[in-house]
Image 1 (cartoon, rainbow, N blue to C red):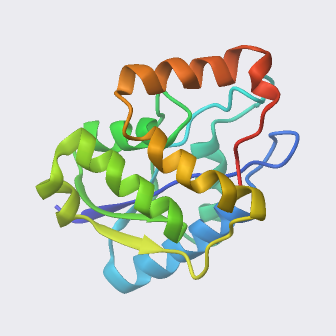
Image 2 (image 1 turned 90 degrees about the horizontal axis):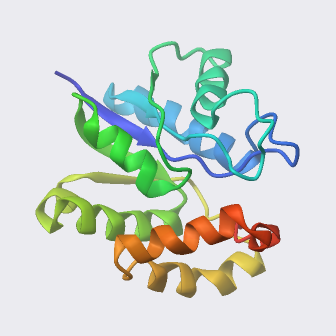
Length: 178
């Protein structure tokens, strides 16, 4: 069985109707990675809690972009959470060989921490982490990056509680995206 490469979602347009430029950069890198390795591309991003009227999951929007750009073999999964851990859980639960993860360079650093917590250091070290060409981080993102990495060392139950508050209370107006 050939390996798979998970393409992590990132941003949506302001109205939530389509994927944003950072996600497109990741998908473009994924197409290049597929040509280099033959790995099947996987998308697993879920519904955005910030966009309750979103018509399609982010994974379906990403798959649509891949089809528009000539790739018709994407494995579309639906994460139960709208975050990196949710996408990883969906990918790990599939019956596919997990080989590579594609994302922004700084996001890959955080992703590896999550994989280590979920599956152990040995598993995390076997994966290939494929970066986009350049980090697409704003000044705000650069300021938030140390906090986002520190957040990952909290137990998953504490992370889930904080994410719930950020998505389901007036705190959702705080945008922690890049």
